[in-house]
Image (cartoon, rainbow, N blue to C red; front, top):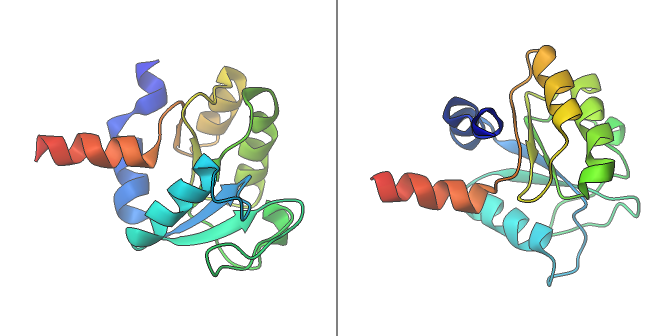
Length: 139
């Protein structure tokens, strides 16, 4: 489990990556994905909604798939069930994303191994909000 939350990978994503594609982000303000996307924006990140309906969310144009995004993606942040999340890790590697983040409760060990084998940093089963709080506590 510790490998899933490697502090260097987390630091790289939080400190050096600016464009975050948020898989599963819709305009539903009650969803965790919406709250975390809003936090990412507050922290200076550009969010890219990835949703089959391609809605505009938090002022950013959405796209139906990662492959539809016409610019580089730093982090693919996945808000999907563990059973379906792996395909987004694979797509992240295919489109050349710099890193993959599976949210709290999202775990796919095979996808983690595949992604890391390509040299792409990945974390699972954590959240940027948690990690920013943890880092602030170290202060």
